[in-house]
Image (tube, rainbow, N blue to C red; front, top):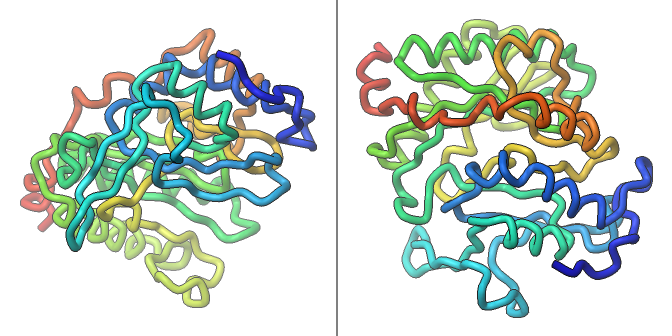
Length: 287
């Protein structure tokens, strides 16, 4: 696939070009595509590189080729909205060639948009947070998931925090999953109120880590595994084994390090759907 202006610098601090960004997505495609396939996408595009203005694009551009899959998804309140769906490597590389630096996905699929198959809590720390506190918080979330029968998977976001995801069996409605995620976040924060909070307003959080359940709402997204982040350092969102968390940094995997990782290690989230839990049964165990 021909890419226009491949030598254009996208990450000035690292000297990475648009061509390097496309090559990153070519490298990660086998691991990344299972996490994109069948899900509505939101694209974060930076045509002039990450130090210039970028934007989130939820809906396909009129110039997108006819072969690129798009799907209309129901909109809360009536009507539908059109989204891009990335099911194959050609689509992924085309979108990267359109200056998509970040890929964000729904927690449900286009076939069942109101039945999430993922629940995600996001650890959002203030500046200066010790990474050891983030790791402890991630493990605390894992333990609370286990108490209600959910399997926990951790991801370094490529930014400042970690995501802790639980695969679901896609039988519960979005609003049920959202309420469950909020209840879990509240319970996690209540267990360590000096370091964790669910306060929505930043001025109420102080120096505590925000345990964010908001990504579980309808049409909300989280950064897809193996997506680059539009930040200095060019780190990617990277799924981890729990045994790796003790030495993991949220932004610890740049393109070179991630390429070497994938050459020797399978995706830790591969096959996570086999451990899908029930949101309704989790509620029953909540107590």
